[in-house]
Image (cartoon, rainbow, N blue to C red; front, side, top):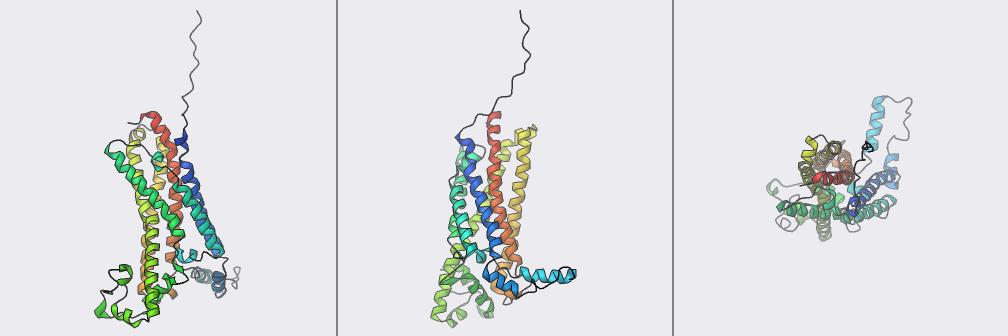
Length: 339
């Protein structure tokens, strides 16, 4: 009789299905959004308005070979002050080259990402948890839709301008007896009613009051869409991340290679969520200061809010790229035997 074969069998291959490629729309769409954010800033530096402000500084005159560190720092600070107070003000002009690039890439990326079946990108659930997790995924899809809406809701337009409203409210004196805001606006546009009192409102002309109302409503829609994109969606990503960590915990304790790789990726996702929250709080401090400080536009800290918001927007796109990449480990979890 022939001796038994000692040839070892190869490990079983993962079976592929349509669900294994569900991450592609989110991955591709997020990369488009990331490209929109980065490319828009580069093109904004070539815009006529930015170049005009930059020429009013010593940026093109300073001799880098002979200038001292203090002089170089002063020149760069003046160059950074050429940026607007918010990212919204940078991209609001859709007719400009940088505005067109932002809208085209963001809308395309957002539409691609909304076609993702997000429930296939995380560990499955059963029973009551399936309903809760399904609700979270539905809210994630709704929040991703805000990327498209945000692209069509700029902070300024032909008949409204949030930045102009901010400067006017900051420069207008507030009566000490009327710090509670406007009684007429508090119920209709509360976020503006809190910043202006009835005495200020009566002092405005009919045309300025109409501009105020239009700007208040348009600005509120703009802020809600930005809130969904930069605050709600990262919070939902945190919920999904915690669920996956709970589901993958046995494999992590067993030191499975794929689970350890997922853990490293999860740590990076968690870092992004924390950084987005920190950058937004930092930005909001400077944003609301603009409604209170009449010297805000000339403040040395004017540009800091812009860079905090820009970092949050960039990390938002990176977070969604990481969310798509994290789904690569779900087939391994299912092969190991999901509950």
